[in-house]
Amino acid sequence: PLHRIAVIAGDGIGQEVMPEGIRVMEAAASKFDIGLQFDRFDFASCAYYEQHGKMLPDDWKSRIGSHDAIYFGAVGWPEKVPDHISLWGSLLLFRREFDQYVNVRPAKLMPGVTAPVVRRDGSPRQPGEIDMVIVRENTEGEYSSIGGRMFPGTEREIVVQETVMSRIGVDRVLRYAFEVARSRPKKHLTSATKSNGIAITMPYWDERVAEMAKSYPDVTVDKFHIDILTAHFVQRPDFFDVVVGSNLFGDILSDLGPACTGTIGIAPSANLNPDRSHPSLFEPVHGSAPDIAGKGIANPIGQIWCGAMMLDHLGYREAHDAVMLAIEAVLRSGSAEVRTPDLGGKGTTREVGLAICQALQR
Ligand code: NAI
Ligand code: MG
Image (cartoon, rainbow, N blue to C red; front, top):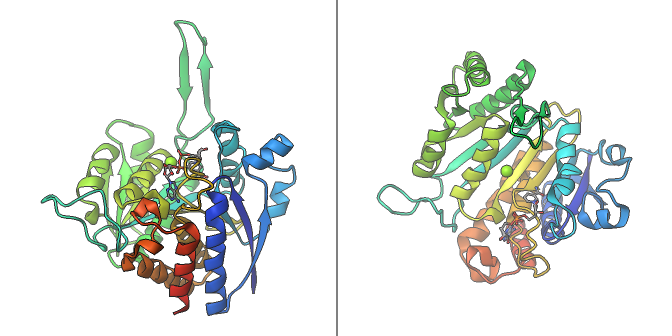
């Protein structure tokens, strides 16, 4: 079959890392005989906003809604468009309208990368010691629009924002997380909670975890309150395998996890609609990086890695694994020519992309 991919490079370094992502995807497609068609769109960028006064055309949903996946770069150019407009007017709309209720972020220490978190005795963490997947609820929870402000600007000012947990919403993300845990060698799932302090919604979350666990007797389950959990991420990241959290807790952990494994330039992310009623979106964790944009030195590995996740989602596990091996081979080589400056090298975005393609073809 031919898979149609909607490509949105967006702003800043999104425009620089996307061509390398596509280069590697095309190399993987030809190696594994996968039919991929890339349709490029210029909207969901601040450049589009400057021209049209909005982030998206009115018919955006019909233009990308029937694609098999969205391959996304980064959006945002704070000097020209305020971040709440660029983000809410594009990426956050996609997540909501396409019901991408799971956000997945692997946090894996790669060979040739120095983790900023060290062992108790001060020695460096080795690849393989940190290998976790963070699963975040992506559509409800603490990020609700229920609430408001009373008596604004007075001494009686009151601000309320409700957390929403639906049984369907909680169960579907938990089921996804348990399935991921079951598919991995350690079969270990950790739930982020705060049921000691947040005494209505979080005990409900815990209850649903315990209920779901009954269907997965092969998965080891534990839970930690979010405060101590963040400490454990830093002090013993080797303990974790799959970590699931509500929208807010998952948000925090999914930045902390990749931060524990090195540069933000290599971290990938997937916004999934596991029901496949709408396209899922694959993007690097990083943003548009205005400080280095235009220099050709952005690390393309985050873009390439999330492309590998896209191949996996489309059903090509073997192609995913091959792209990951190619990334690891290039990182392991340690050569300064094929490392961007964020990893201490002097290579360019393009050189890294080409090197990963070459490793893939070998
Ligand atoms: P950022 O991720 O763009 O940059 C943070 C720092 O990391 C910068 O010093 C940057 O140079 C570095 N960096 C990021 N990606 C890199 C890469 N691939 N290679 C090497 N170095 C890299 O975050 P920042 O500066 O807070 O945000 C800039 C813009 O991006 C804002 O408009 C923000 O709203 C937007 N943004 C968009 C996201 C998205 O599209 N999903 C995610 C995060 C931020
Ligand atoms: Mg975040």
